[in-house]
Image (tube, rainbow, N blue to C red; front, side, top):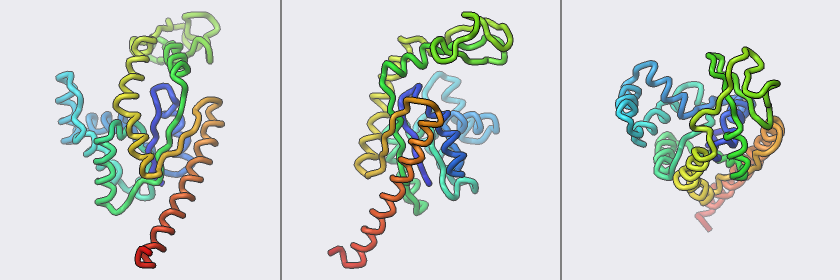
Length: 236
């Protein structure tokens, strides 16, 4: 299966992507991993991306798209992949469609993880990270430390990262609503979107996702079959 995973920050995309990729036997391709791999390996795309990042600029879409396309053409992605963090906007989604079409393939589904905004803020703003190299993560509500402000594992100081404050989270949500959320309508028009609630235990959300993707794949197969039958009848 070729799947795009979408959802607001704090929806648990990274966690779900890892489980789904394992269950579906396809690679999990995240934007962060793409950038880190290309930069550490000093590929031409990595050097180009780093030049923009070093100047404090956003990496252009065409560079990100080229990295993603190169990764999707690797042998382990021959039978599918799960994209996490890409595409981030409609122009990237259109470029992805064109790249896949050139290879004679298409997406099988777009999984939309739905989480109420207040829950997103609660999830992210409640995170506390250990200052030591271990960087163990706790949560004031869901997994609080035994002693407030102290890491259970190494005794280090726990702190709230600057990008985890409520103000920053709400700004990130604004960016998501403005730039990324429109791809749901874009893919929805193609009949590719399945939306599930990302609330609940991790394994519950994973099962919900797997069931939704299975239904989507069955529906897509039927639509493709109907399309082929229609062509066989001269489109009548």
